[in-house]
Length: 251
Image (tube, rainbow, N blue to C red; front, side, top):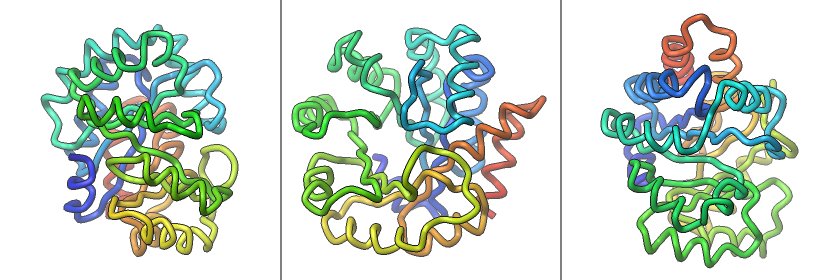
């Protein structure tokens, strides 16, 4: 289970990798490298033409993956091989449109059968009880965002419709590396923890080992995406680069 993997990790860092970049075979190798390097879980981003929550780095990664011929069918064909060879739970992050086009339940079932243990849908409707029920029924975690602007009433609703872990967004706006993380994140994580027994993991803006260290002093885990993908896109050896980036963040 995702929650257990986070709780038992000595240093729960969850890397994000854009699927299909530089190609699907490389994605599988990157996932294995990240798992070998000690990732508590791995978030696999589904490329999308209008990624509203993503900053420039992840927008570029999504665009390049789509240009390289990424398809969801191709990903799900490769996932069983990759998931069988890794110890870290695999989580898919996708906007809702690709799921709705294929059928929400059908897509989630196929992901589960391919080895995916959790799903994040950034543009999920406010009331997600129906989708949570489907996830519980088929045995896959639904991970949800709590943003800096989320009201207490809304926070309670989100937490009640969540499993695996709660994703506490550290900054206002889109993803992307930041030189500092707002100090009020600590208070927000404490507020979420008062409402749930689920692990609370922080993400958006994380780019340094010092930030990871600080966030892990009060959060259960840290998600790192743009920092990793920027280096993967610039490296002649993206597999080894992903391994080294994670090792440095976990040092």
